[in-house]
Length: 509
Image 1 (spheres, rainbow, N blue to C red):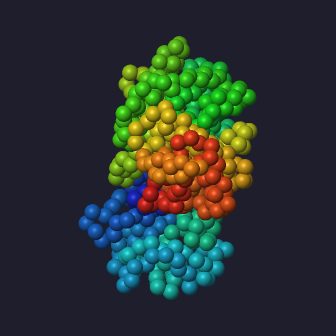
Image 2 (tube, rainbow, N blue to C red):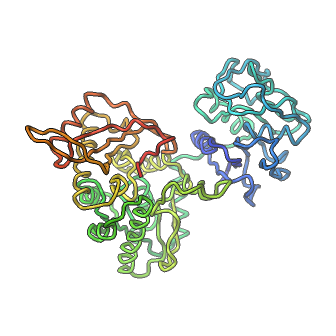
């Protein structure tokens, strides 16, 4: 890539947001841990230092050697980065008299400073720190202040090094995107060339060079990531791509058939494999969520390997890995504690002996959709809600049986079809139903019933890292509940999940 921007991650919860904002400017960037600097620093035209949960005054605070960057490459230091430059280069950082967290407004901006071009006084910014810069570092020049923070922004005289104590990447900083554009485009001269069209052209050429005349096998899921990966590979290698769509018996109602029908018109070489019974047999009696995921992952690999062996001379396995997965695997503190296992992340078992190709590994989810649109993929498919790899198994709390799968498929179908009929589907990022391991008393006609409870879940999000529950219309929820109870045998109570992430997760398991 040309015109790279390097983001050094000091562990901030907002680091990925910095990358997303930079990408929105049509500028390519990469996130690297502060303690694992890339060797090819000469390829980067600008560097951004992220925030951090650490205090620069702490003994265990991140303390990288920036001598190969500072003064040689333009740098923007955000929050912790700004305090780091001050603390270790002649300035003074002390605890804030009051914790500086939340909205603030720029009360003073130095005239004719390119970093604040087109940004006016009183512009809202977002603060998130318990330390503050009391004295600027050597050669520091104050650029902006807020009512409570004297040194909200500064630059180092004689070099293209800038620092801000607020977070331009969050939406609460109303001119944050403008500030990033000022730094990257006006100060650093980075060209805005990172577009879906450019990505497709570049990736197809790279795939041709990487794969040559070799064959590639890809496990399709029907979701956005694997579909876009398949179309990219198909553009590069055509019939040398072999797609396998495995029915694990835990898909949505009629999904196996409908997804295969969708792929028929896309020119992809797809084979559908119905292994429902094999998965359900392996899951019999297993209730632990993590054990269910691992079992599904193991059986998937077994089925996939069986099918791959029916092909001859396959050299590559394609995966729909996207950038958040890559960032997580190389994070500052290593991969985070396991919240849940993903059966399609983490590489292959040794016995498969295939090289991995991941054409989407540098894209965020929204970028994957834009690339798909650039290649003419059906908007309905690109707008499809995320669906977990283990499928309905992690929406059935407790053990899995064919009857429970049937019940949940019917409930889910009523809910999702209802969202579409009421024109609500595209306003929701992800939705689904959960079968709870409890029964409740009900009355149907003159009879007392003791049947299952289901929960409905609908969230709005950008990338799934955080999510808020969707305030669906009461009339819709009432209609959906009545339809489920009347149509789905075995269910007599419907509840709606109004938990946000965090503290809850989107899926229940």
